Image (cartoon, rainbow, N blue to C red; front, side, top):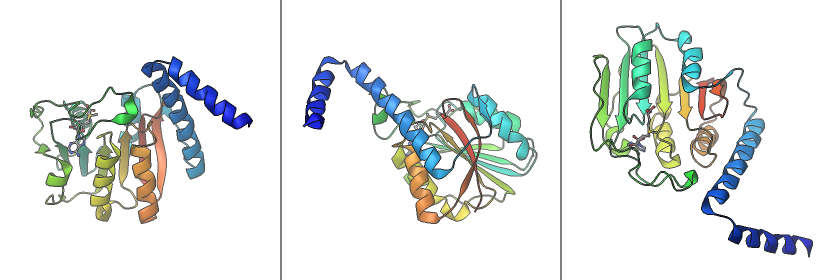
Length: 229
Ligand SMILES: C[S@@+](CC[C@H](N)C(=O)[O-])C[C@H]1O[C@@H](n2cnc3c(N)ncnc32)[C@H](O)[C@@H]1O
């Protein structure tokens, strides 16, 4: 009886709240769910930083002078690509960025209605970069990835910054044959449990692969892992 009354009170409360307030409540719950998932997975980041650059800088020394293949899914205006272009020193490293440059293929519904379909569109414009090691592959991942052949490399670093569950799981499954012990995988927007964490969880269950947390920002939005095989 008490539970039924409580549920009725909650719907009455919902009727009084604004969309923004409900979104904030959802966000609170998302962080709680994320904490629960991390605990269940035994994930503990040894270092946490205020900003994304701190996370990148903490991990980069492990491979920056090696022959890296850096693959970025979700390029937008190229901010993260520029960071890695400045940081990776090996002349035979390759930095390949994949993006529709037409924005998100579907609404990022977990984000309070802010990121509609097409958000992050650059209207087809590809970022201009001086570094000849950088190459962009324009189109939906479903179009560009199946025919893509990975160049030779000693270390594979994958950035997943497409925000959505659907885009992230597609990339992980497509790259499955190349993800092995020593592959670095960075998630940008890890804090929304129904998207990137869900994709990682399903990928781990499907493959049995294990990932070790390396560094994250304080909000867990930016999270770097290395695959342990
Ligand atoms: C958050 S932005 C990337 C931001 C960028 N890494 C940075 O640091 O500035 C997400 C990008 O993912 C792209 N994206 C998402 N899903 C995609 C898909 N299935 N195929 C191609 N591009 C996709 C969008 O076009 C968008 O530019």
